[in-house]
Length: 70
Image (cartoon, helix red, strand yellow):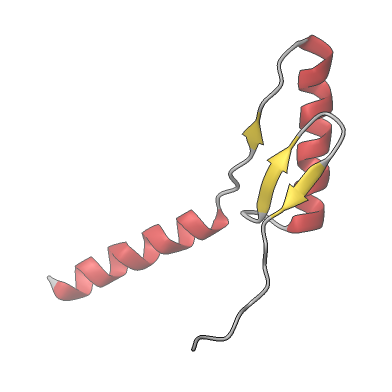
């Protein structure tokens, strides 16, 4: 039973780390096309799962700086 739980937990962790969450705050016909273009560029630049925000004209990556634990 423990082995199965660990296996399922591992699978869920991998799936969660590979999913890309993109916040979209603009609407409209042409802007949705631009959001799609910028989203693809953001994923290419930041990596899947590392995109923070996407707009029609820009995107930001999540902070990936590893800070030492005190």
